[in-house]
Length: 408
Image (cartoon, rainbow, N blue to C red; front, side, top):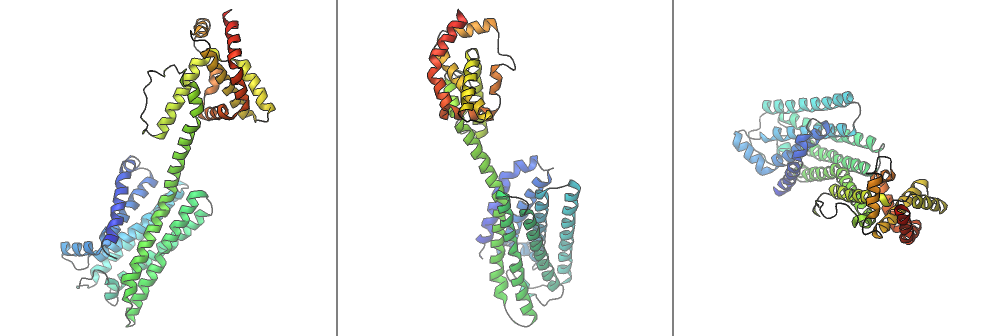
């Protein structure tokens, strides 16, 4: 593996961490957010400091041959601990239990890191090795134990992550289960990685040379495992975000028929502050709902409860559920009111209503418009319901009759 195989993933992780930095700063007290930030930071550091050019640079900077070895091994141990802690916080549970489990893993891998440094300090590794330190010093006292310890730590983390992910995956569904299974597969690569390293080291103990397993095969397995695990961590979050965005835009689109029906009668249509088309989807939906409510408010004097009652009975007779029948009845009353308003260009009904009743009160016919779910059902009914189509066809006549009754 060349240097780009290390620096490209590190750069990608750095960009992702920078993009997420504002959210991490705001939610740093949240254990899950904190775990994500630490994991992303450590993943980037592992790739940076494991690259041969960085290994050589750190050795030269410190003047200690192979000082990068315990540094990289400690970063790997910390990364394993951060993955385990992230899964614990992600899974949730009683806070005291979660904190206790997280502290145990952090303490355990902290002890491993200290032991790695102590073993390196006790050992003697004067010849700089950028790629094959594990096999070159396989028979050196204390360095040998350091190598075995970090490989055991990686193996334990891989097995523990698989157990935790599989257990949790059996309890959940959807993208979260898929993400957990992918994470488990990614950390499963820790086992063959450690196995190939151990094989090469044991071969050195017995006078053989299988160094290619350690220098060529093992790094490839580690890189694949890291990338697969990263996909597993990101997949549920990305798919949830995409799903939320799809749901929001779907709501915006389904509100279209009702919004267009009421657009011409909205009291604030001409002077409302319009948002740009590139604004967030949630803001677009809020704007559309606000326009709809404005239109409803301007139509209040033209709402006819008899139209709504007849449409509700007709929808029930046609086989609609009560909730659907209510949406169809509301839509029928709205479309009739729009046409009644068009038949009263001088606004005499509005003037009469304002003089007699004042603005609509809570609990009046306008109150039924509360709630985005009702608005969506009403909008769909405007386009699909034969009951609404029938009310639309009768609207001009009934509106004129109602107007004459109110002004007579």
